Image 1: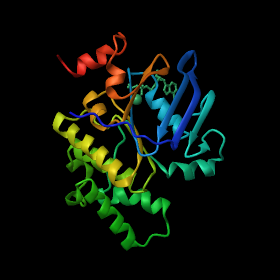
Image 2: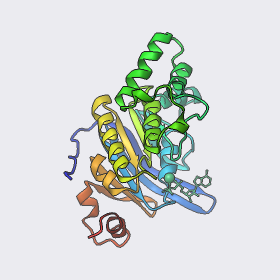
Image 3: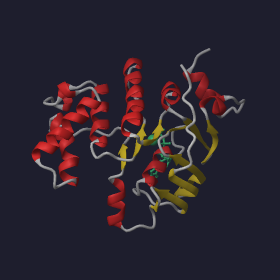
Length: 256
Ligand SMILES: Nc1ncnc2c1ncn2[C@@H]1O[C@H](COP(=O)(O)OP(=O)(O)OP(=O)(O)O)[C@@H](O)[C@H]1O
Ligand SMILES: [Mg+2]
């Protein structure tokens, strides 16, 4: 598999400096610095419990930092009003780990829901067109009248991504998009993440434990170790090390 190139540009859509976050005595994030550049896919790796999900919850203002600066699309998320935060969240699509579709709604209704709630001026026809276009983009137009329970796990993931994309976010945050999927479906999701990057010009953070996914989608890779991104660069740069905290990730994913 060819490695994706690092994108050379200087516009930062997310800028994090000296971020600290503790829960009780547990100091999870210990001075995290991280930039997300416009148009890139940045993969975030790290052991379970190292604070990856906490990081993206801080980015969207669901958790507040104890110290440090978190700027998203040039706004400091912990300093803006709640109204400004809600407006910012429309530009940042996040698919939570284990996020579910609304089981009692059809695929069409699942996609309509965020649109109708956030863009009240749209006509029924415009809503229909947006839903159909987005389902087509994820290759699942044929499921439009199905219920989530009738879809495969991979299809549900795709619909979840479509539901997030329908608001045309500038930034996408994917929390373990391939967790629990078979290898073929993982490849489909990786391709979809790359298609979303190209077609919608999104900038994305992709949290994953799946190094095939990391290599396939990431322009850069960042590994959270002991509360900081101690390894950051291309896939090769991050894994070209004898660091005993890093090697097991590689060895487990690529048996050699
Ligand atoms: N709201 C919260 N209150 C208290 N502790 C929390 C809260 N959210 C997260 N934590 C703790 O912070 C640590 C990091 O959690 P987080 O969910 O970010 O891990 P993660 O890196 O995403 O792990 P995984 O790979 O398993 O998803 C964990 O020890 C967790 O218990
Ligand atoms: Mg997590």
